[in-house]
Image (spheres, rainbow over the protein chains, first blue to last red):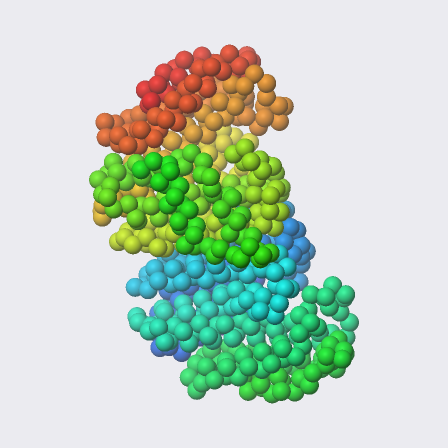
Length: 311
Length: 311
Protein backbone atom coordinates (compact mmCIF):
# COMPACT_ATOMS: atom_id res chain seq x y z
CA UNK A 1 0.00 0.00 0.00
CA UNK A 2 1.51 3.35 -0.97
CA UNK A 3 0.90 6.73 0.59
CA UNK A 4 -1.73 7.70 -1.99
CA UNK A 5 -3.95 4.78 -0.99
CA UNK A 6 -3.35 5.47 2.69
CA UNK A 7 -4.24 9.11 2.19
CA UNK A 8 -7.50 8.26 0.46
CA UNK A 9 -8.40 5.89 3.33
CA UNK A 10 -7.73 8.79 5.73
CA UNK A 11 -9.95 11.05 3.68
CA UNK A 12 -12.75 8.46 3.64
CA UNK A 13 -12.58 8.10 7.40
CA UNK A 14 -12.75 11.87 7.85
CA UNK A 15 -15.84 11.82 5.68
CA UNK A 16 -17.47 9.11 7.75
CA UNK A 17 -16.67 10.68 11.11
CA UNK A 18 -17.29 14.37 10.55
CA UNK A 19 -20.18 16.24 8.97
CA UNK A 20 -19.78 18.26 5.80
CA UNK A 21 -21.44 21.60 6.55
CA UNK A 22 -23.33 23.73 4.07
CA UNK A 23 -21.04 26.31 2.44
CA UNK A 24 -22.97 29.15 4.08
CA UNK A 25 -22.45 27.76 7.58
CA UNK A 26 -20.26 29.64 10.03
CA UNK A 27 -19.09 26.29 11.43
CA UNK A 28 -15.74 25.41 9.83
CA UNK A 29 -14.89 22.41 12.03
CA UNK A 30 -14.78 19.90 9.20
CA UNK A 31 -12.70 22.23 7.02
CA UNK A 32 -10.19 22.76 9.84
CA UNK A 33 -9.96 19.01 10.49
CA UNK A 34 -9.29 18.38 6.80
CA UNK A 35 -6.69 21.14 6.77
CA UNK A 36 -4.89 19.62 9.77
CA UNK A 37 -4.75 16.10 8.32
CA UNK A 38 -4.54 16.55 4.52
CA UNK A 39 -2.46 16.59 2.40
CA UNK A 40 -0.82 14.00 4.60
CA UNK A 41 2.79 14.23 5.75
CA UNK A 42 5.17 11.28 5.60
CA UNK A 43 2.58 9.01 7.26
CA UNK A 44 5.46 7.43 9.16
CA UNK A 45 3.32 5.93 11.93
CA UNK A 46 0.58 4.46 9.68
CA UNK A 47 3.27 3.04 7.39
CA UNK A 48 5.00 1.46 10.37
CA UNK A 49 1.74 -0.10 11.58
CA UNK A 50 0.93 -1.45 8.13
CA UNK A 51 4.48 -2.86 7.76
CA UNK A 52 4.25 -4.61 11.14
CA UNK A 53 0.85 -6.01 10.18
CA UNK A 54 2.25 -7.46 6.93
CA UNK A 55 5.48 -8.73 8.54
CA UNK A 56 3.45 -10.64 11.14
CA UNK A 57 1.31 -12.41 8.57
CA UNK A 58 -1.66 -10.05 8.31
CA UNK A 59 -3.73 -10.69 5.18
CA UNK A 60 -2.71 -8.11 2.52
CA UNK A 61 -6.12 -8.54 0.89
CA UNK A 62 -8.05 -7.68 4.06
CA UNK A 63 -6.88 -4.24 4.99
CA UNK A 64 -10.14 -2.68 6.18
CA UNK A 65 -9.46 -3.04 9.91
CA UNK A 66 -5.76 -2.14 9.85
CA UNK A 67 -6.73 0.87 7.72
CA UNK A 68 -8.99 2.11 10.52
CA UNK A 69 -6.07 1.69 12.90
CA UNK A 70 -3.82 3.68 10.55
CA UNK A 71 -6.38 6.50 10.51
CA UNK A 72 -6.48 6.36 14.30
CA UNK A 73 -2.69 6.87 14.42
CA UNK A 74 -2.66 9.74 11.95
CA UNK A 75 -5.66 11.56 13.53
CA UNK A 76 -4.03 11.19 16.91
CA UNK A 77 -0.70 12.46 15.63
CA UNK A 78 -2.48 15.40 13.95
CA UNK A 79 -4.35 16.34 17.15
CA UNK A 80 -1.11 16.43 19.14
CA UNK A 81 0.52 18.69 16.53
CA UNK A 82 -2.45 21.08 16.34
CA UNK A 83 -2.44 21.51 20.13
CA UNK A 84 1.38 21.68 20.30
CA UNK A 85 1.34 24.55 17.80
CA UNK A 86 -1.12 26.68 19.83
CA UNK A 87 0.11 30.10 21.01
CA UNK A 88 0.00 28.98 24.66
CA UNK A 89 2.03 25.85 23.83
CA UNK A 90 4.94 26.03 21.31
CA UNK A 91 3.42 29.03 19.47
CA UNK A 92 4.35 27.73 16.01
CA UNK A 93 2.92 29.71 13.10
CA UNK A 94 3.93 27.12 10.52
CA UNK A 95 3.54 23.37 10.12
CA UNK A 96 4.66 21.36 7.08
CA UNK A 97 5.41 24.61 5.24
CA UNK A 98 1.89 26.00 5.65
CA UNK A 99 0.32 28.27 8.28
CA UNK A 100 -0.66 26.16 11.30
CA UNK A 101 -4.33 25.39 11.98
CA UNK A 102 -4.89 28.16 14.54
CA UNK A 103 -3.27 30.73 12.22
CA UNK A 104 -5.84 29.94 9.53
CA UNK A 105 -8.96 29.26 11.62
CA UNK A 106 -8.29 31.13 14.88
CA UNK A 107 -7.10 29.99 18.25
CA UNK A 108 -10.40 28.64 19.61
CA UNK A 109 -10.73 26.55 16.46
CA UNK A 110 -7.22 25.21 17.12
CA UNK A 111 -8.40 23.98 20.51
CA UNK A 112 -11.64 22.46 19.15
CA UNK A 113 -10.03 20.95 16.03
CA UNK A 114 -7.46 19.19 18.23
CA UNK A 115 -10.24 17.93 20.51
CA UNK A 116 -12.23 16.77 17.49
CA UNK A 117 -9.27 14.87 16.02
CA UNK A 118 -8.55 13.29 19.41
CA UNK A 119 -12.17 12.14 19.72
CA UNK A 120 -12.30 11.04 16.08
CA UNK A 121 -9.15 8.96 16.59
CA UNK A 122 -10.80 6.91 19.35
CA UNK A 123 -13.94 6.68 17.22
CA UNK A 124 -11.81 4.98 14.52
CA UNK A 125 -10.50 2.54 17.12
CA UNK A 126 -14.02 1.79 18.34
CA UNK A 127 -15.03 0.83 14.80
CA UNK A 128 -12.34 -1.82 14.39
CA UNK A 129 -14.04 -5.18 14.11
CA UNK A 130 -11.51 -7.55 15.65
CA UNK A 131 -11.29 -9.78 18.76
CA UNK A 132 -8.41 -7.61 20.02
CA UNK A 133 -10.23 -4.26 19.65
CA UNK A 134 -10.76 -3.63 23.35
CA UNK A 135 -7.19 -4.66 24.22
CA UNK A 136 -5.82 -2.30 21.59
CA UNK A 137 -7.99 0.47 22.98
CA UNK A 138 -6.76 -0.21 26.51
CA UNK A 139 -3.16 -0.14 25.36
CA UNK A 140 -3.52 3.03 23.33
CA UNK A 141 -5.44 5.02 25.95
CA UNK A 142 -2.72 4.10 28.46
CA UNK A 143 0.13 4.93 26.06
CA UNK A 144 -1.30 8.25 24.88
CA UNK A 145 -3.11 9.57 27.95
CA UNK A 146 -1.97 11.24 31.18
CA UNK A 147 0.59 8.50 31.86
CA UNK A 148 1.92 8.62 28.29
CA UNK A 149 2.11 11.12 25.44
CA UNK A 150 0.34 13.91 27.32
CA UNK A 151 2.65 13.45 30.32
CA UNK A 152 5.55 13.79 27.87
CA UNK A 153 4.13 17.09 26.62
CA UNK A 154 3.91 18.26 30.24
CA UNK A 155 7.57 17.23 30.85
CA UNK A 156 8.54 19.26 27.80
CA UNK A 157 6.47 22.38 28.47
CA UNK A 158 7.21 22.54 32.21
CA UNK A 159 10.98 22.44 31.69
CA UNK A 160 11.32 19.14 33.55
CA UNK A 161 12.98 17.91 30.32
CA UNK A 162 16.01 20.10 31.17
CA UNK A 163 16.61 18.82 34.68
CA UNK A 164 18.66 15.74 33.80
CA UNK A 165 19.54 13.43 30.94
CA UNK A 166 17.10 10.96 32.46
CA UNK A 167 14.29 13.50 32.21
CA UNK A 168 15.27 14.15 28.61
CA UNK A 169 15.03 10.45 27.73
CA UNK A 170 11.74 10.08 29.64
CA UNK A 171 10.29 12.98 27.66
CA UNK A 172 11.34 11.44 24.32
CA UNK A 173 10.02 8.04 25.32
CA UNK A 174 6.64 9.46 26.35
CA UNK A 175 6.16 12.21 23.79
CA UNK A 176 7.58 10.43 20.74
CA UNK A 177 8.03 6.77 21.69
CA UNK A 178 4.56 5.94 22.94
CA UNK A 179 2.73 6.62 19.66
CA UNK A 180 5.38 4.59 17.80
CA UNK A 181 4.89 1.75 20.29
CA UNK A 182 1.15 1.95 19.55
CA UNK A 183 1.88 1.68 15.81
CA UNK A 184 3.92 -1.50 16.26
CA UNK A 185 1.75 -3.15 18.92
CA UNK A 186 -1.51 -2.33 17.12
CA UNK A 187 -0.22 -3.46 13.71
CA UNK A 188 0.90 -6.74 15.24
CA UNK A 189 -2.27 -7.26 17.30
CA UNK A 190 -4.49 -6.91 14.22
CA UNK A 191 -2.49 -9.41 12.14
CA UNK A 192 -3.25 -12.56 14.12
CA UNK A 193 -5.28 -13.37 17.17
CA UNK A 194 -2.73 -14.01 19.85
CA UNK A 195 0.32 -12.05 20.95
CA UNK A 196 2.28 -13.37 23.92
CA UNK A 197 3.93 -11.21 26.55
CA UNK A 198 7.44 -11.85 25.15
CA UNK A 199 6.39 -10.55 21.76
CA UNK A 200 4.62 -7.56 23.28
CA UNK A 201 7.80 -6.72 25.19
CA UNK A 202 9.86 -6.93 21.99
CA UNK A 203 7.60 -4.44 20.21
CA UNK A 204 7.68 -2.17 23.24
CA UNK A 205 11.50 -2.18 23.15
CA UNK A 206 11.56 -1.62 19.39
CA UNK A 207 9.18 1.32 19.76
CA UNK A 208 11.16 2.76 22.64
CA UNK A 209 14.43 2.57 20.65
CA UNK A 210 12.80 4.02 17.60
CA UNK A 211 11.29 6.90 19.58
CA UNK A 212 14.64 7.81 21.12
CA UNK A 213 16.53 7.46 17.81
CA UNK A 214 13.90 9.50 15.98
CA UNK A 215 14.15 12.36 18.41
CA UNK A 216 17.95 12.28 18.87
CA UNK A 217 18.62 12.15 15.12
CA UNK A 218 16.09 14.89 14.56
CA UNK A 219 17.92 17.13 17.06
CA UNK A 220 21.30 16.17 15.56
CA UNK A 221 20.14 16.96 12.03
CA UNK A 222 19.16 20.46 13.20
CA UNK A 223 22.85 21.07 13.98
CA UNK A 224 23.81 20.21 10.39
CA UNK A 225 22.77 23.68 9.23
CA UNK A 226 25.68 26.10 9.04
CA UNK A 227 23.73 28.70 11.02
CA UNK A 228 21.22 28.03 13.76
CA UNK A 229 19.56 30.59 16.01
CA UNK A 230 20.56 31.16 19.63
CA UNK A 231 17.21 29.74 20.79
CA UNK A 232 17.67 26.53 18.75
CA UNK A 233 21.16 26.15 20.20
CA UNK A 234 19.82 26.67 23.69
CA UNK A 235 17.16 23.97 23.44
CA UNK A 236 19.25 21.46 21.47
CA UNK A 237 20.25 18.80 24.00
CA UNK A 238 23.28 17.64 21.96
CA UNK A 239 25.02 20.81 23.06
CA UNK A 240 24.50 19.84 26.73
CA UNK A 241 25.27 16.11 26.69
CA UNK A 242 27.20 15.27 23.48
CA UNK A 243 29.18 12.34 24.97
CA UNK A 244 26.22 10.71 26.66
CA UNK A 245 23.80 11.17 23.76
CA UNK A 246 26.35 9.81 21.33
CA UNK A 247 26.64 6.60 23.38
CA UNK A 248 22.87 6.33 23.80
CA UNK A 249 22.22 6.87 20.09
CA UNK A 250 24.80 4.21 19.16
CA UNK A 251 23.35 1.73 21.69
CA UNK A 252 19.80 2.30 20.50
CA UNK A 253 20.75 1.95 16.81
CA UNK A 254 22.51 -1.33 17.59
CA UNK A 255 19.57 -2.57 19.65
CA UNK A 256 17.10 -1.66 16.91
CA UNK A 257 19.21 -3.45 14.31
CA UNK A 258 19.27 -6.55 16.52
CA UNK A 259 15.54 -6.42 17.24
CA UNK A 260 14.65 -6.06 13.56
CA UNK A 261 16.75 -9.14 12.79
CA UNK A 262 16.24 -10.99 9.53
CA UNK A 263 12.44 -10.75 9.73
CA UNK A 264 10.53 -7.47 9.70
CA UNK A 265 11.29 -6.89 6.05
CA UNK A 266 8.44 -4.42 5.55
CA UNK A 267 9.33 -2.53 8.73
CA UNK A 268 12.92 -2.31 7.51
CA UNK A 269 11.71 -0.80 4.22
CA UNK A 270 9.85 1.93 6.10
CA UNK A 271 12.83 2.63 8.36
CA UNK A 272 15.30 2.48 5.49
CA UNK A 273 13.63 5.40 3.70
CA UNK A 274 13.86 7.52 6.82
CA UNK A 275 17.41 6.50 7.75
CA UNK A 276 18.72 7.10 4.23
CA UNK A 277 17.44 10.65 4.35
CA UNK A 278 18.88 11.28 7.80
CA UNK A 279 22.24 9.72 6.90
CA UNK A 280 22.60 12.09 3.95
CA UNK A 281 21.72 15.11 6.09
CA UNK A 282 24.23 14.16 8.79
CA UNK A 283 27.02 13.28 6.32
CA UNK A 284 26.56 16.54 4.43
CA UNK A 285 26.40 18.60 7.60
CA UNK A 286 29.15 16.80 9.50
CA UNK A 287 31.44 19.79 9.70
CA UNK A 288 28.63 22.09 10.85
CA UNK A 289 27.60 19.65 13.56
CA UNK A 290 31.17 19.49 14.81
CA UNK A 291 31.41 23.29 14.78
CA UNK A 292 28.18 23.69 16.76
CA UNK A 293 29.29 21.17 19.36
CA UNK A 294 32.56 23.12 19.72
CA UNK A 295 35.07 21.45 22.00
CA UNK A 296 32.48 18.71 22.58
CA UNK A 297 32.78 17.68 18.95
CA UNK A 298 32.43 13.99 18.22
CA UNK A 299 33.44 11.77 15.36
CA UNK A 300 30.11 11.05 13.70
CA UNK A 301 31.33 8.23 11.47
CA UNK A 302 30.20 5.42 13.82
CA UNK A 303 26.65 6.85 13.87
CA UNK A 304 26.62 7.16 10.09
CA UNK A 305 27.83 3.56 9.77
CA UNK A 306 25.07 2.36 12.06
CA UNK A 307 22.48 4.27 10.07
CA UNK A 308 23.97 2.67 6.96
CA UNK A 309 23.34 -0.78 8.41
CA UNK A 310 19.67 0.09 8.94
CA UNK A 311 19.23 1.42 5.39
CA UNK B 1 -25.18 5.64 46.23
CA UNK B 2 -24.70 9.19 47.44
CA UNK B 3 -22.36 11.84 46.10
CA UNK B 4 -19.66 11.09 48.67
CA UNK B 5 -19.33 7.51 47.44
CA UNK B 6 -19.40 8.65 43.83
CA UNK B 7 -16.72 11.23 44.56
CA UNK B 8 -14.43 8.65 46.15
CA UNK B 9 -14.89 6.37 43.12
CA UNK B 10 -13.87 9.33 40.94
CA UNK B 11 -10.82 9.94 43.07
CA UNK B 12 -9.83 6.24 42.90
CA UNK B 13 -10.09 6.29 39.12
CA UNK B 14 -7.94 9.42 38.92
CA UNK B 15 -5.39 7.59 41.02
CA UNK B 16 -5.40 4.57 38.75
CA UNK B 17 -5.18 6.54 35.51
CA UNK B 18 -2.71 9.30 36.29
CA UNK B 19 0.69 9.22 37.92
CA UNK B 20 1.36 10.92 41.23
CA UNK B 21 4.56 12.93 40.66
CA UNK B 22 7.24 13.55 43.25
CA UNK B 23 6.64 16.84 45.08
CA UNK B 24 9.82 18.32 43.60
CA UNK B 25 8.70 17.65 40.02
CA UNK B 26 7.92 20.57 37.73
CA UNK B 27 5.16 18.46 36.15
CA UNK B 28 1.83 19.39 37.73
CA UNK B 29 -0.46 17.44 35.38
CA UNK B 30 -1.94 15.21 38.05
CA UNK B 31 -2.48 18.13 40.39
CA UNK B 32 -4.29 20.09 37.67
CA UNK B 33 -6.46 17.08 36.79
CA UNK B 34 -7.42 16.68 40.45
CA UNK B 35 -8.15 20.39 40.71
CA UNK B 36 -10.43 20.24 37.65
CA UNK B 37 -12.46 17.26 38.88
CA UNK B 38 -12.47 17.51 42.68
CA UNK B 39 -14.23 18.52 44.84
CA UNK B 40 -16.96 17.34 42.50
CA UNK B 41 -19.88 19.52 41.43
CA UNK B 42 -23.46 18.29 41.45
CA UNK B 43 -22.44 15.09 39.61
CA UNK B 44 -25.69 15.42 37.68
CA UNK B 45 -24.61 13.18 34.77
CA UNK B 46 -23.12 10.35 36.86
CA UNK B 47 -26.19 10.43 39.11
CA UNK B 48 -28.44 10.22 36.07
CA UNK B 49 -26.49 7.24 34.70
CA UNK B 50 -26.59 5.44 38.05
CA UNK B 51 -30.33 6.12 38.39
CA UNK B 52 -31.02 4.74 34.90
CA UNK B 53 -28.91 1.68 35.71
CA UNK B 54 -30.92 1.00 38.88
CA UNK B 55 -34.29 1.74 37.25
CA UNK B 56 -33.56 -0.78 34.50
CA UNK B 57 -32.74 -3.58 36.91
CA UNK B 58 -28.97 -3.18 37.26
CA UNK B 59 -27.62 -5.02 40.29
CA UNK B 60 -27.15 -2.48 43.13
CA UNK B 61 -24.51 -4.76 44.65
CA UNK B 62 -22.37 -4.86 41.50
CA UNK B 63 -21.51 -1.26 40.84
CA UNK B 64 -17.90 -1.60 39.68
CA UNK B 65 -18.61 -1.30 35.94
CA UNK B 66 -21.27 1.42 36.15
CA UNK B 67 -18.86 3.30 38.45
CA UNK B 68 -16.25 3.34 35.70
CA UNK B 69 -18.90 4.68 33.35
CA UNK B 70 -19.80 7.40 35.87
CA UNK B 71 -16.13 8.42 36.04
CA UNK B 72 -16.05 8.50 32.24
CA UNK B 73 -18.98 10.95 32.23
CA UNK B 74 -17.53 13.23 34.89
CA UNK B 75 -14.00 13.28 33.37
CA UNK B 76 -15.50 14.04 29.99
CA UNK B 77 -17.68 16.81 31.42
CA UNK B 78 -14.65 18.24 33.25
CA UNK B 79 -12.51 18.24 30.08
CA UNK B 80 -15.16 20.17 28.16
CA UNK B 81 -15.40 22.77 30.94
CA UNK B 82 -11.60 23.20 31.23
CA UNK B 83 -11.31 23.82 27.48
CA UNK B 84 -14.46 25.99 27.40
CA UNK B 85 -12.96 28.24 30.07
CA UNK B 86 -9.69 28.85 28.13
CA UNK B 87 -8.91 32.48 27.19
CA UNK B 88 -9.34 31.70 23.48
CA UNK B 89 -12.73 30.08 24.14
CA UNK B 90 -15.15 31.62 26.73
CA UNK B 91 -12.32 33.22 28.73
CA UNK B 92 -13.84 32.40 32.11
CA UNK B 93 -11.65 33.13 35.12
CA UNK B 94 -13.92 31.31 37.54
CA UNK B 95 -15.60 27.92 37.69
CA UNK B 96 -17.66 26.64 40.62
CA UNK B 97 -16.60 29.64 42.67
CA UNK B 98 -12.86 28.98 42.29
CA UNK B 99 -10.29 30.23 39.76
CA UNK B 100 -10.53 28.12 36.61
CA UNK B 101 -7.81 25.57 35.83
CA UNK B 102 -5.82 27.77 33.43
CA UNK B 103 -5.87 30.66 35.93
CA UNK B 104 -4.16 28.46 38.53
CA UNK B 105 -1.83 26.36 36.34
CA UNK B 106 -1.33 28.50 33.23
CA UNK B 107 -2.92 28.39 29.80
CA UNK B 108 -0.80 25.57 28.31
CA UNK B 109 -1.69 23.44 31.30
CA UNK B 110 -5.35 24.22 30.63
CA UNK B 111 -4.95 22.75 27.14
CA UNK B 112 -3.05 19.66 28.35
CA UNK B 113 -5.28 19.05 31.40
CA UNK B 114 -8.34 19.06 29.14
CA UNK B 115 -6.61 16.67 26.73
CA UNK B 116 -5.60 14.44 29.65
CA UNK B 117 -9.14 14.31 31.03
CA UNK B 118 -10.53 13.57 27.56
CA UNK B 119 -8.07 10.70 27.11
CA UNK B 120 -8.62 9.47 30.68
CA UNK B 121 -12.37 9.43 30.09
CA UNK B 122 -12.02 6.99 27.18
CA UNK B 123 -9.52 5.00 29.22
CA UNK B 124 -12.27 4.52 31.84
CA UNK B 125 -14.64 3.32 29.11
CA UNK B 126 -12.02 0.90 27.79
CA UNK B 127 -11.74 -0.68 31.24
CA UNK B 128 -15.44 -1.52 31.52
CA UNK B 129 -15.79 -5.26 31.54
CA UNK B 130 -19.17 -5.82 29.90
CA UNK B 131 -20.47 -7.39 26.66
CA UNK B 132 -21.73 -3.95 25.60
CA UNK B 133 -18.41 -2.11 26.15
CA UNK B 134 -17.59 -1.62 22.49
CA UNK B 135 -21.13 -0.54 21.62
CA UNK B 136 -21.09 2.01 24.43
CA UNK B 137 -17.75 3.28 23.17
CA UNK B 138 -19.08 3.59 19.63
CA UNK B 139 -22.13 5.48 20.84
CA UNK B 140 -20.17 7.85 23.09
CA UNK B 141 -17.43 8.67 20.56
CA UNK B 142 -20.18 9.49 18.05
CA UNK B 143 -22.19 11.56 20.54
CA UNK B 144 -19.24 13.53 21.92
CA UNK B 145 -16.96 13.87 18.89
CA UNK B 146 -16.98 16.11 15.80
CA UNK B 147 -20.59 15.19 15.01
CA UNK B 148 -21.71 15.76 18.58
CA UNK B 149 -20.61 17.78 21.61
CA UNK B 150 -17.59 19.33 19.87
CA UNK B 151 -19.72 20.36 16.89
CA UNK B 152 -22.04 22.02 19.42
CA UNK B 153 -19.12 23.98 20.84
CA UNK B 154 -18.23 25.08 17.29
CA UNK B 155 -21.87 26.19 16.69
CA UNK B 156 -21.67 28.23 19.87
CA UNK B 157 -18.24 29.81 19.37
CA UNK B 158 -18.72 30.57 15.66
CA UNK B 159 -21.96 32.48 16.24
CA UNK B 160 -23.97 29.96 14.20
CA UNK B 161 -26.08 29.63 17.37
CA UNK B 162 -27.46 33.14 16.73
CA UNK B 163 -28.59 32.58 13.15
CA UNK B 164 -31.99 31.03 13.86
CA UNK B 165 -34.00 29.36 16.58
CA UNK B 166 -33.23 26.08 14.87
CA UNK B 167 -29.51 26.71 15.22
CA UNK B 168 -30.05 27.56 18.87
CA UNK B 169 -31.84 24.27 19.51
CA UNK B 170 -29.22 22.31 17.53
CA UNK B 171 -26.48 23.87 19.65
CA UNK B 172 -28.24 22.92 22.91
CA UNK B 173 -28.93 19.40 21.67
CA UNK B 174 -25.29 18.85 20.68
CA UNK B 175 -23.46 20.75 23.39
CA UNK B 176 -25.68 19.82 26.34
CA UNK B 177 -27.99 17.03 25.18
CA UNK B 178 -25.46 14.56 23.82
CA UNK B 179 -23.61 13.95 27.10
CA UNK B 180 -26.96 13.54 28.87
CA UNK B 181 -28.02 11.04 26.19
CA UNK B 182 -24.77 9.16 26.88
CA UNK B 183 -25.58 9.09 30.61
CA UNK B 184 -28.99 7.52 29.99
CA UNK B 185 -28.00 5.14 27.18
CA UNK B 186 -24.83 3.98 28.96
CA UNK B 187 -26.58 3.50 32.31
CA UNK B 188 -29.24 1.43 30.60
CA UNK B 189 -26.80 -0.58 28.47
CA UNK B 190 -24.79 -1.66 31.51
CA UNK B 191 -27.85 -2.83 33.46
CA UNK B 192 -28.86 -5.75 31.27
CA UNK B 193 -27.53 -7.34 28.12
CA UNK B 194 -29.99 -6.35 25.47
CA UNK B 195 -31.50 -3.00 24.56
CA UNK B 196 -33.81 -2.89 21.55
CA UNK B 197 -34.00 -0.01 19.10
CA UNK B 198 -37.32 1.23 20.53
CA UNK B 199 -35.82 1.55 23.96
CA UNK B 200 -32.69 3.23 22.61
CA UNK B 201 -34.90 5.76 20.82
CA UNK B 202 -36.81 6.46 24.02
CA UNK B 203 -33.60 7.24 25.92
CA UNK B 204 -32.42 9.40 23.04
CA UNK B 205 -35.64 11.41 23.20
CA UNK B 206 -35.46 11.68 27.00
CA UNK B 207 -31.88 12.92 26.77
CA UNK B 208 -32.74 15.39 24.03
CA UNK B 209 -35.64 16.84 26.06
CA UNK B 210 -33.54 17.00 29.18
CA UNK B 211 -30.69 18.75 27.35
CA UNK B 212 -33.02 21.40 25.94
CA UNK B 213 -34.85 21.90 29.26
CA UNK B 214 -31.56 22.10 31.15
CA UNK B 215 -30.21 24.82 28.91
CA UNK B 216 -33.45 26.79 28.53
CA UNK B 217 -34.15 26.79 32.26
CA UNK B 218 -30.55 27.74 32.94
CA UNK B 219 -30.87 30.74 30.63
CA UNK B 220 -34.24 31.65 32.13
CA UNK B 221 -32.88 31.45 35.66
CA UNK B 222 -30.18 33.96 34.71
CA UNK B 223 -32.94 36.48 34.04
CA UNK B 224 -34.28 36.05 37.59
CA UNK B 225 -31.55 38.32 38.94
CA UNK B 226 -32.69 41.91 39.35
CA UNK B 227 -29.63 43.19 37.49
CA UNK B 228 -27.82 41.46 34.65
CA UNK B 229 -25.02 42.87 32.52
CA UNK B 230 -25.51 44.14 28.99
CA UNK B 231 -23.45 41.20 27.66
CA UNK B 232 -25.57 38.64 29.51
CA UNK B 233 -28.69 40.27 28.13
CA UNK B 234 -27.27 40.21 24.63
CA UNK B 235 -26.47 36.50 24.66
CA UNK B 236 -29.60 35.40 26.53
CA UNK B 237 -31.83 33.84 23.86
CA UNK B 238 -35.03 34.35 25.87
CA UNK B 239 -34.78 38.02 25.00
CA UNK B 240 -34.81 37.15 21.28
CA UNK B 241 -37.46 34.42 21.11
CA UNK B 242 -39.59 34.54 24.28
CA UNK B 243 -42.80 33.24 22.66
CA UNK B 244 -41.14 30.39 20.82
CA UNK B 245 -38.90 29.30 23.68
CA UNK B 246 -41.83 29.36 26.06
CA UNK B 247 -43.76 26.95 23.83
CA UNK B 248 -40.71 24.73 23.33
CA UNK B 249 -39.93 24.58 27.05
CA UNK B 250 -43.56 23.67 27.85
CA UNK B 251 -43.60 20.97 25.15
CA UNK B 252 -40.34 19.47 26.31
CA UNK B 253 -41.38 19.45 29.96
CA UNK B 254 -44.61 17.67 29.02
CA UNK B 255 -42.74 15.19 26.82
CA UNK B 256 -40.22 14.45 29.57
CA UNK B 257 -42.99 13.90 32.08
CA UNK B 258 -44.67 11.46 29.69
CA UNK B 259 -41.42 9.62 28.90
CA UNK B 260 -40.55 9.21 32.58
CA UNK B 261 -43.99 7.69 33.17
CA UNK B 262 -44.61 5.64 36.31
CA UNK B 263 -41.25 3.83 36.05
CA UNK B 264 -37.88 5.58 36.26
CA UNK B 265 -38.28 6.24 39.97
CA UNK B 266 -34.57 6.77 40.54
CA UNK B 267 -34.25 9.04 37.52
CA UNK B 268 -37.21 11.05 38.82
CA UNK B 269 -35.44 11.47 42.16
CA UNK B 270 -32.38 12.91 40.44
CA UNK B 271 -34.48 15.23 38.28
CA UNK B 272 -36.71 16.24 41.17
CA UNK B 273 -33.77 17.70 43.13
CA UNK B 274 -32.78 19.80 40.15
CA UNK B 275 -36.29 20.90 39.22
CA UNK B 276 -37.13 21.88 42.80
CA UNK B 277 -34.16 24.20 42.88
CA UNK B 278 -34.97 25.71 39.50
CA UNK B 279 -38.65 26.14 40.37
CA UNK B 280 -37.72 28.12 43.46
CA UNK B 281 -35.34 30.35 41.50
CA UNK B 282 -37.92 31.06 38.80
CA UNK B 283 -40.79 31.67 41.25
CA UNK B 284 -38.69 34.04 43.34
CA UNK B 285 -37.38 35.90 40.32
CA UNK B 286 -40.63 35.98 38.36
CA UNK B 287 -40.93 39.75 38.40
CA UNK B 288 -37.31 40.24 37.33
CA UNK B 289 -37.72 37.80 34.46
CA UNK B 290 -40.80 39.68 33.27
CA UNK B 291 -38.95 42.99 33.55
CA UNK B 292 -35.99 41.73 31.55
CA UNK B 293 -38.23 40.35 28.82
CA UNK B 294 -39.95 43.76 28.63
CA UNK B 295 -42.93 43.82 26.33
CA UNK B 296 -42.18 40.18 25.50
CA UNK B 297 -43.04 39.23 29.07
CA UNK B 298 -44.75 35.91 29.53
CA UNK B 299 -46.84 34.40 32.26
CA UNK B 300 -44.44 31.93 33.83
CA UNK B 301 -47.02 30.07 35.89
CA UNK B 302 -47.51 27.23 33.34
CA UNK B 303 -43.75 26.54 33.32
CA UNK B 304 -43.64 26.55 37.11
CA UNK B 305 -46.59 24.16 37.22
CA UNK B 306 -44.87 21.80 34.81
CA UNK B 307 -41.69 21.88 36.87
CA UNK B 308 -43.87 21.13 39.90
CA UNK B 309 -45.16 17.99 38.22
CA UNK B 310 -41.60 16.78 37.69
CA UNK B 311 -40.59 17.43 41.29
